[in-house]
Amino acid sequence: MLNRRHLRVKVLQSLYAYHQSNSGDIKQHEKNLLITIDKVYEMYIWMLSLISEVTSYAENDAEERATKHLPTADDLNANLKILSNRFILSLHQNKEYLAGLKKYKVAWDFEPELVKSLFILLKKSEDYQEYLKKTGDTIQTDKDIIKFIFKKVILKSPLAEQVFEDKFLYWPVDKDVLQALIAKTFKNFSFDNPQENKLAEVTGNWDEDREFIVNLFEESIRHNDEYQALITGKTQNWEPDRIAMMDTLLMKMAIAEFANFSSIPVKVTINEYLEISKEFSTPKSNSFINGILDKILADLKAQNKVKKIGRGLIEE
Image (cartoon, rainbow, N blue to C red; front, side):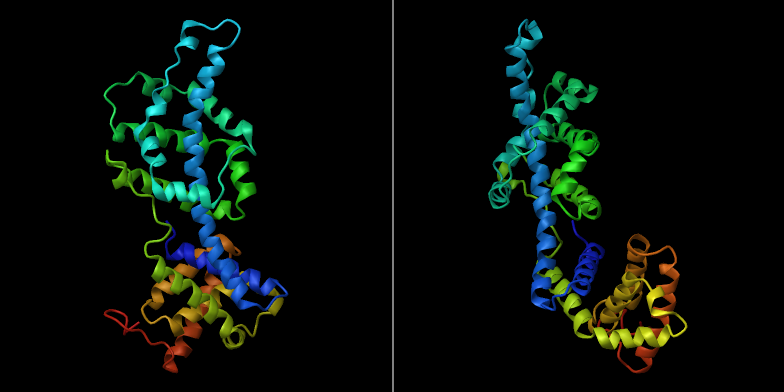
């Protein structure tokens, strides 16, 4: 699921888009920010659907084998055990999943070769052949082959990778989140009664997380000039065009958290943005941002502008 670091990244991406655009419409960019969160959930539903489509293709494959020119005995008696897989049957009865298919208009007919190619890879695998031979399966054992389909077939497929990258702008960034959502789904689907099996939630607490990202986005823009002045005051020996835009945005977001988010320890804020800088900025950004933020934080504390509330936060 999306944790706070992922959410900060979403805000960073939206702030970058805002400052790069000619539109000063904060509300529109805020709306786009929330859409990027929904896109993660949409990607999750599409992936669950693809897993389902791959298992369902066993029936198509059996028909093709049975109608070929000289079918063998195996062709005429294809093993369709996968069609009764408990995880898939439970998924097909899940109201949230069915609502997601409808909401996002999920259909794989735009890439007809994808499902077929994935099933062929599955059919040739030793894991699938062993699965077909097993007896006495439960939902726990049925999940094993579904995990294999997801991890070793779909995620290893260059075609599947390309399809998701083309469909979802932030696929390279959100791929890890998707894997966490699917893993959570496997954990949640542990009951024989389909009604007890729940999809994963995109965040731990959406009401709180929504408030966090919207406030962080708005505060970073509302105090943009003020925070820029703080940064400029500590980077006088640097030419402005030598400071990466991502570094500036990360520092503004950190300052916004120092001054406006009373429940977030400053150490957590600094560590989070230093980690994000490793992935989204330059190799030297980490030490640069750390040094500048330390100086700005010292000034803000001296002016009594960093106020933290809660046990263990007051002395931060």
